[in-house]
Length: 222
Image 1 (cartoon, rainbow, N blue to C red):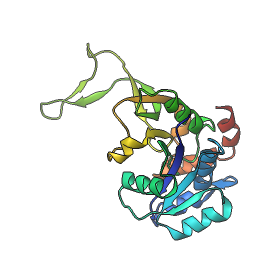
Image 2: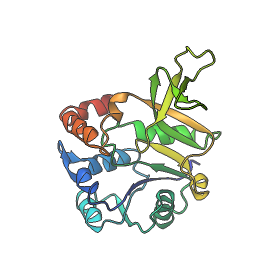
Image 3: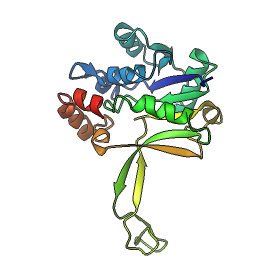
């Protein structure tokens, strides 16, 4: 029998961030897009919006009645997710987490991340990452010098950056231990085009607006 899964979208009541989440990007807002992506993961997987913003809960209930709106009380990120799972899907073994600040993602990404974790019992978590190539520098021990990472100092290593909030599937026991991601992690690699539209800053928000007319086709094809 497959483990039970729940998807949580945590959102804090923030007068600066929330307006960006409900601003229309094409026919849907960033929050609606994120929740719609979650709903495509499976009809039997509950989707929970965990927020302490009453108006935001009402906004979602009117537009996406399938989404469970949980009144968040915990301030800590992991605690808020645990709280939402305990209240809405207490028997869930796998928890997927999405963040609405990433409005665009391949439509299959959420389901793929969850299925990869189900199929791989040796992993604690599956995270969405962006692959980059190039020189990687770190601070040296002397002054403000920097040194290049790599065995010979002249290699260009492949580096993977987690795109937090794009898609994460993790075992509930990891969350119950106070952690978002476990030690044994598998990657779900995505293209950089998806990561540039990030509503956490003004350039990312503007890029999201520019992508809006084109993204429906891209999401389906990716």
